[in-house]
Structures are given as C-alpha cells and as structure tokens.
Image: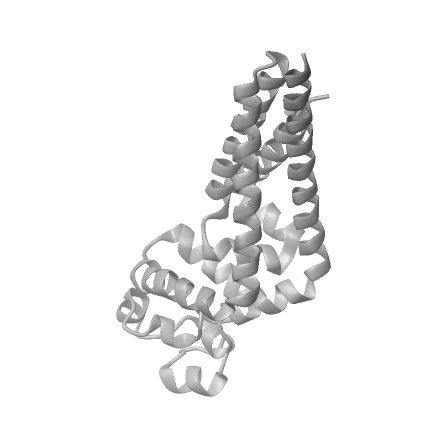
Length: 226
C-alpha cells in the first residue's frame, strides 16, 4: 500500500477536468449549469485546474518514489507538502466562511479593474462573462457600476444587456431601475443552494489527503523499525 494512487487520482482528475474545460468549455457549462459558469467567470479555472492537477501528480509521484525506494526523506517531504496543502485548504475555507466581506473586497479590487479594461476587448473573458450574466441573471461582480468608465461603455455607449434584464439600449437609468444583482451575491446563493454537493466534494478531497498522509507516515514509521 502506498500514497501513489491517492496523489495520482486527485491530480489526474483535476488535470483531466482542466484540459476538458480548456478544449470544450461549452459542454462543461452545459452539463454543470449556472454554478460552473459562475465560477468560470472569476478566474480562468481551466488553467488553474491544470496547474493544480500537475502539482498533485508531481506530489503523488514523490510519494510513490518514497514508498518504492523506501526513502524516509521523500516520504517525509510528501507528508509535509500534503499537510501544508491540507492546512491551506482549511484556512481558505475558514476565511471564505468567516470573512465573506473581505473576500468580496479582494475580488472587487482584482475583478472590477479587469472588467473595466478587458470586457469587450478580450473575446474569451467577454464570452465567459456574457454566459455567466445571462445564465445566472446578474450584472458585473457587484452591479452595473462595475462597467462605469469601462472600455465597453466608451465603445458602445451602453451597459451590457443583462444589466437591464436584456432591455436595449441599456443606459444608466434603466440599469438603475432594473437593479440586477451582482454576480458575487448570486454565486454565494448558488453555493448555498448546492452546499451539500460542495461539502461532499470538499470532504472527499480532504479524506484523500488524510489517507495519503496516514499511509506515508505509516510507511515512514515502518522504515524506522527496520
């Protein structure tokens, strides 16, 4: 028994999903619906998954080599890396739950300038946001003001149609009266609605990591007895 399958299973899954989203994002959105599009618009999740999946594969390979070669150094390195990831995940979950307002502030500082500069100019980002705002029925990260003084507004003299419940032309008056919520709030609602699924996935990942750490520490202790 070794940490190999557990590390490779998680890493291979994330890597495969990342490649799938990169190659055929439309089918991913069709299958997983509004929540997936909500997540996709915040970051380019496909490349994120590819990077994380590759790292997990490398970590799994490290644990496998340590088990096969009976190397205490590699096993301890594997255990330490997985432990750090596990602690970071718990910390991120706590921050996300307790400091939702802080998360919104940080996202606003990053995403809002991106919307102002790239929406309407970057085809990929524009498409993802359009899909998200249409499917989730939201506007910008916070509301229509995210597009004020933006490249899109300067070029088209109008706000994106979803900000006015698809009424065109979407001017500031109609956008204000429509009061379409921002995508951040809608994402939170989607996550709360699918809390069971999100919690199940998180628990599964945590279980794999704990099992991998347990096995690596068991093998490490066994080597001490030889």
